[in-house]
Image 1 (cartoon, one colour):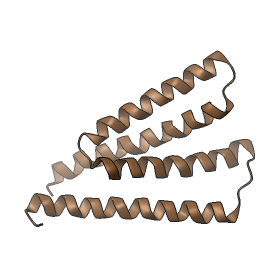
Image 2 (cartoon, rainbow, N blue to C red; image 1 turned 45 degrees about the vertical axis):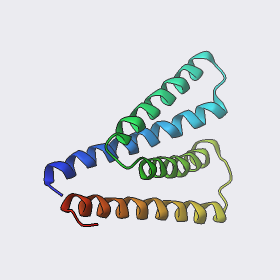
Image 3 (cartoon, one colour; image 1 turned 180 degrees about the vertical axis):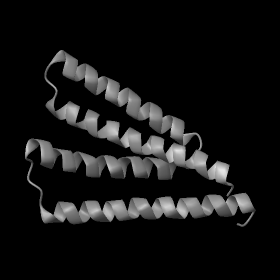
Length: 123
């Protein structure tokens, strides 16, 4: 994979990470928003989150990008609920989120290898 192509893909993966950050915001907003401006922030977070995910999905494998988005969003939401709102954090939740993130990282690594092999013409 050329350096330029790799840099473009890194930008797209960055969009997925930022989209997941906004996902955490809108999920928390759905649970905790009560004032009109809190709902507006939630709606904006939804729009930004999905816009970035859709843009990244134009250059990345959609299934893998979505899995990374959901995995990071899930881990971020559980972490934010624990840190900001005092939700209980059970060891089983931590272990399962760790397993989820390991799977997401594995998918990304396999996808990167598949893309570089595809560009070299290896099937």
